[in-house]
Image 1 (spheres, rainbow, N blue to C red):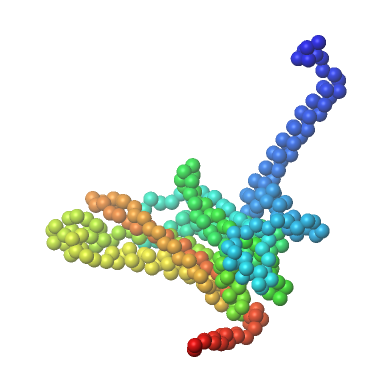
Image 2 (tube, rainbow, N blue to C red):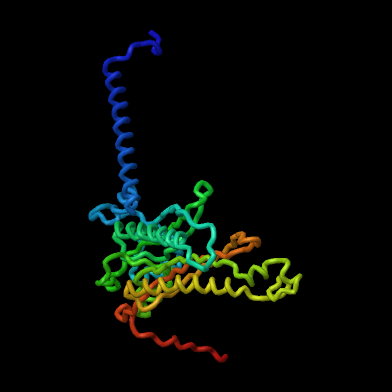
Length: 329
């Protein structure tokens, strides 16, 4: 009989039914894991698959997991000399939708909708980065960098991705008062240099402030092509500072720095180093009455590593420089 038309045996039918049932059960389990992961993310945590992978680094008796890192050779070497061992790369990510905001303001003000969106999005990314570090048994995360992204499919959304290398410190370097892994945006060499100087990184401080500055009458005159033509004091033909815009930039910076200073105190630090300040501005074309104007929106992102003096970390008294002997021949 042609094998294409032969009848299937009862064993073959049972096997096919068992395979189909196994596929259905696997699909159900996959859907359940996806739903559980979504709940985890809604609560500010990381997906289940990431948790299961990271826990393997702490299982006793298991074969050592292969570590990965974004450390340069010089960074890895500097850390190794102090007994600091890399565990794995860790990451935290958040895509955040920005809520409704006014089109423009008539008085200088902070755009809280935007400021809060930036700060909450970054907080969630760093929280997930810290959770990954905790799960793999890390004492610290070095080289933390935060990349800001955007997507065409979500024009009103923000994205922050925090990436770093989780490390395990030597026993003598661990902070007995620490309750979580320490985050730092310092490179491996910088981390080592701080420890050798008796200074301990204790965390990251970061804040974003967005300020809206409406154009004053003088600024509108300077922006206009008619101010100078009619002999106005603020005519666009004359070089002049837009003082209201300059003041708005200062206010945005001071607001961001004041929040960073408050975070330093909360972490019990003595200061913040490696402060990265990023500023960008854009103009909004608005119409007030019979006149068109260009208002300013300025954004300040500030981030740095909080430090605390800890002389016990120092590797010893500074050694004198080596004596150089030169041949006079």
